[in-house]
Image (cartoon, rainbow, N blue to C red; front, top):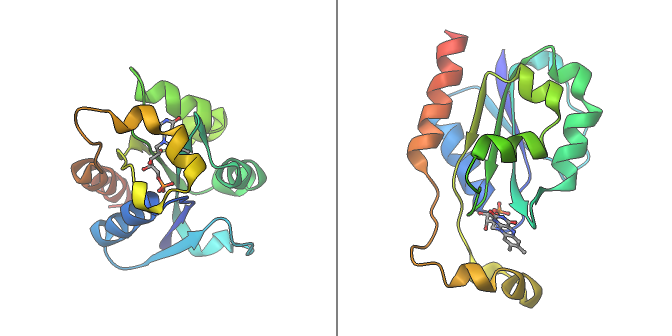
Length: 160
Ligand SMILES: Cc1cc2nc3c(=O)[nH]c(=O)nc-3n(C[C@H](O)[C@H](O)[C@H](O)COP(=O)(O)O)c2cc1C
């Protein structure tokens, strides 16, 4: 039985993380971009990983609604949850609690924050204005590839 990574990415950073995670997990991983409407056959999967990025304090609505609509099915499989963003605040766990349903969070085997990037080249004017303050950050935020690997290893440990 395989692994499904269901994700949403507004400007491509989460997609990049997903591609790295797929590589770290090895064979048997399917990808599903949540914005595309397709029925998932959950019986094919032992593990379902769900991730998205934070915009104005919230994860994509499609990610939230994917979790809520499929909650019953998701509670029957092994679950991993992750977020991408540039400023998770003092406590990443608090942010995870805000964006994923409590029941799913309690059920998840692995939860993580993968860092993020500010991809100004891909932003429209509105997005540039909204992230202007972050543009003045001293250190540009980056994807944390070590955390992606640790997340993959945690799921593999549990699957061994
Ligand atoms: C309009 C906009 C709003 C954002 N708001 C937040 C935010 O509230 N908190 C945060 O930590 N990062 C915020 N970010 C940064 C994104 O989470 C970060 O760029 C992430 O890597 C984007 O992933 P994606 O390309 O997969 O959508 C924002 C980015 C944009 C463009």
